[in-house]
Amino acid sequence: MIKTTVAALLKGKDLLQNINVNGWVRTFRSNRFIALNDGSSLNNIQCVLDFEAFDEATLKRITTGAAINVKGTLIESLGKGQKFEIQVTELSILGDCNPEVYPIQPKKHSLEFLREQAHLRIRTNTFSAVMRLRSALAFAVHQYFTQNGFYYFNAPIITGSDAEGAGELFRVSNLDAKKLPLTNTGAVDYSQDFFGKQTNLTVSGQLEAETYALALGKVYTFGPTFRAENSNTTRHLAEFWMIEPEVAFNDLEDNMDLAQDFIQYTLKYVLEHCQDDLDFLNQRLADEEKTKPTQERSEFSLLEKLHFVVDNNFKRVSYTEAIEILKNSAPNKKNKFQYPIKEWGADLQSEHERFLVEKHFKCPVILYDYPAEIKAFYMRLNEDGKTVRAMDVLFPGIGEIVGGSQREERLDVLVEKIKALGINEKELWWYLDLRKFGTCVHSGFGLGFERLVQFTTGMGNIRDVIPYPRYPQNAEF
Ligand code: ATP
Ligand code: MN
Image (tube, rainbow, N blue to C red):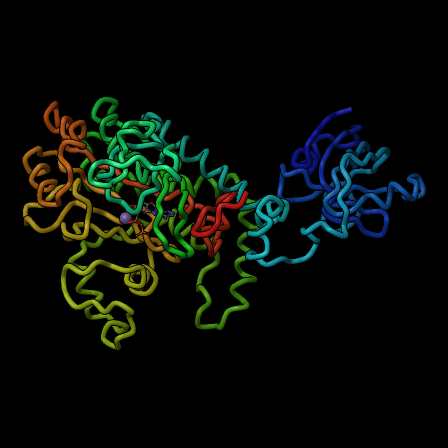
């Protein structure tokens, strides 16, 4: 007897063999047909019972969600909808599932309802497809970097530096919140805290990745990052996974090439390896689009969007050019932007980014050379003295998917910038050391993994592409 999976059975290679498979009942109809799923595939295998061979009590226990073991013969199916099916000779109930109280019924549930049942939502087609794709994308990320000579680097999750400046921090402390030790001036005395100083969950592994790039050449992080920003949007999480390559001797153009090549590789990988799941999500999105007013519907299907990104270069546009386009755009002139673009120097909001990508260029865009004032301290200053070598990759429907830069490698310029911003230079002693000991041009970027999963799966809300989303007022599960 061959112990096997649904995915293997659906390929039909154990035809006419005695097989043994475990799984969960998706549906049971006519006391005869079980649709069985074990997570190995989006598709179910049909198991056919001769109900006269089974007692009434057993048949009653074959309900949606029940765990069962099936033994039988794999045969070619005469019915429509499947090539192979199992003729069941033995069936045992491994775990009952009471249909009266089981939240996941064989019908369409709203994504909001399923978010409240995040421990069970993975049993639906949509979430199993999303999470299998997430897993495949993560594999593709590691494969891309490994094949291209990068080392996987684990940045610390608890950090003592608050200089990254990428958003609000979650403090890490084991002080007794009811009895905080205070200094003479009445401030919390963090010298008595676990690490002897104030510590936080990391918002980015970049600064540490730079230290590794300047020894190992090419490195990347792929780990959790945390931001306590109170942004209740469809694109922000308080805990998300970030991929941050950092490469010595790469300038901004190399960095743009890397970002494009990397994203295209991961999408190509899933197009080649996850066809069933992508076809399903393609259809899901098409059905969802049909419920929208015609003018709001996307011109392209999910698969068309993925192929488009894989097959086309990302358009590279300087911030200055982008501002000109935005200033002269119809929505700006008709006062349709919430934040009208008045002059050079304005920070771009997602409405502007989306106009550039979705309406103007109609393709992924890399914006570069931003005003120094609106970007982080570590980005390399251009010769014009007012812009920095920053780049953001903007995607349709998502907005910013990548943020990166060429880093400031000149000690004097960096120190001056740090002082001007009032950042504590002493805290960054190790970061500044890189500029003293064998400094070199180097660049990197951060890609929010969930935003990539969102784009790949066509899911509208980032809370639906991570197993247990953390966002304001929610840390259930
Ligand atoms: P945004 O402007 O979208 O808030 P950001 O400019 O603050 O993003 P960066 O600091 O540049 O983000 O981080 C790099 C990447 O990490 C972003 O391009 C995005 O893909 C992702 N990212 C940033 N913040 C979040 C978040 N709160 N949840 C999920 N992904 C995020
Ligand atoms: Mn950014």
